[in-house]
Length: 286
Image 1: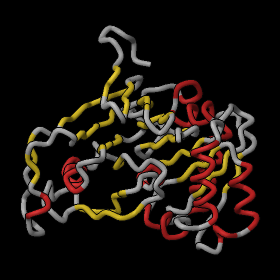
Image 2: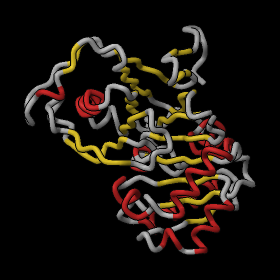
Image 3: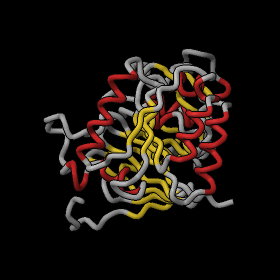
């Protein structure tokens, strides 16, 4: 069955219209990531539900998103503060998910999302609406992006580059099972742990998202890069050597013929066919 909904995983630290930083190269109202989230959700009248479950400061994070979306002219934005599985089974929580045009997961600790939402009624509704509702958007930043996959990076060292056991894997929400997503990818030097993740699961595609950078994924298959940074695609499909399964923990690993793409704003990629469609060299940055 073809997926009808839209996923927007974001690499973290996206422009919220309140920071002044050289990192943010795109005009917030017209070109920023959250502006694109609003557009994909149906515009300023969209019913957006922010879920700060992953955060250690959910009230503050929720308020930040209320402010950020208000700058974009959105008035129908609510915060759903889920802190337990019981919260995920409440009638009022379920009603908010059923009525939402867009769900926005905040950053923090992705394991909190799987612990408090995974396997609940809300999780079932998210899966169903994403598969069957073409007007439904699920966005998530940092932890909220990483949890979208089935094989989820739950933690691990960035400094122990490509040492077996440096990455910790757990089950995510399973919205897009063909990917493994890592975030804050460039700034925190996570090349090694994503490499180990795809070595463990060579049938999957690894995605490393830089900060203030994201994907708009349509049909569960085709994505467009958005934001001011870059993404790294790890394609292990053609590996000719991968010794992950035979090594002991703590041992340096070897992979050969790992295909890596560096993509940026406006570039496209097909997950099924592994084909890229990039902007012409002489195109303006969009």
